[in-house]
Image (cartoon, rainbow, N blue to C red):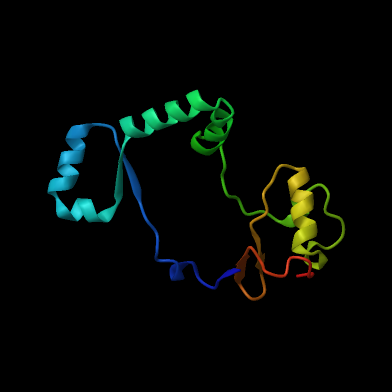
Length: 131
């Protein structure tokens, strides 16, 4: 279970940059400040690996499309009442029950927010308890 009191507490954030040109990678290597600010990836290597995965197993393409395209996964925060299957007060429903309703709508429930306490709860341990 992850409880985040303040988003500023999360300072373990990494940045990944795509290098489209091998000449750019030389600049990143030479300049130590640029080299330490982010992780760098050369596109040709990634493309080759993606092509190899899809060639080996065609069903991997659907997964990669979902993960890598603009309309793939996007985390969003919205009230539980927006889910069609939620009846009554969502605050009186267990995380497990909300997750089942969300799954029926092809939504992955990651956590919930306690408005009064200002806490964000991700992957709660007690999923069958009303929150």
